[in-house]
Length: 335
Image (cartoon, rainbow, N blue to C red; front, side, top):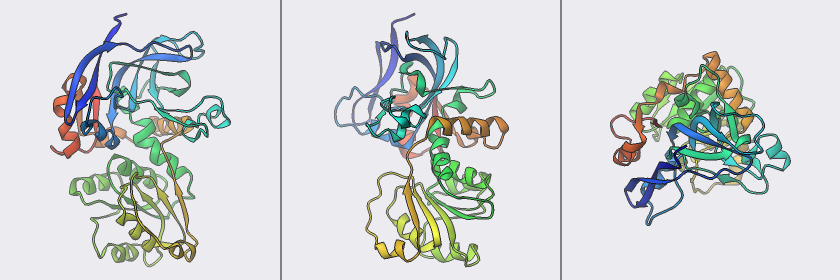
């Protein structure tokens, strides 16, 4: 095996370069994966804005082929096609034993390094892909689709519920579809017209840009019932004001989008008897369930993938990801 590989590294602001480096050295419980596809997440934008060279490499939505195995690997073998759960826990606690690495009380590691030809990951973080699932589709299982799947699974969402998805990036668009296949009546909110159009294609019945009259329009859409569940995927502070205003008594607010800082009056939660919780990423079981939905045809993750880039071309193309230019909704690095 060639002991060198290509990798994208960040050397400063807007300075990504293809470098040649050593392939990772395997630990006993790890497999070496030949990256075949890696989704580009909105959170990967940090890679474009570093102030100085960094050894950490972005890319956490990876899928590929196992090309080597550590001495303690039990289930996987060379040639297996897998998707990677990017979050690594301690591996020993009850949560990790259940494949819930993201809930490890001993701390989690976001492994990254998907913008590389090869990466080393624990066997326990690998989901074998069904023969009908491509690497490109497989790369979207754990984050793009697993994140909203995990969040929705913790709610009581059922057929006929009014659900509002705020923020229709890739996570929000997946949330729209997942709510739709549960039989919910879905409202999608986003300022970007192309994202609103994509939300309609994923099953939203009503789409709207953020607007001062939006709350009134949504309540009218629900026939004065109010909203049962809000899935906040934008990470924008005004979304919480909107959510608290439109939720019905006993409704649920799920916080998925990172980074919103806002003030709220606790009475807004108390007087409506609201349930509010946060949900981060997904578990191995969530990934298995998402793959079942793909195989059954209930979801088609590639429908809003608009761009695919070769690893060598990524430095020159990454500005499109930052600017959402050229009609970009979701992009993938492929080999």
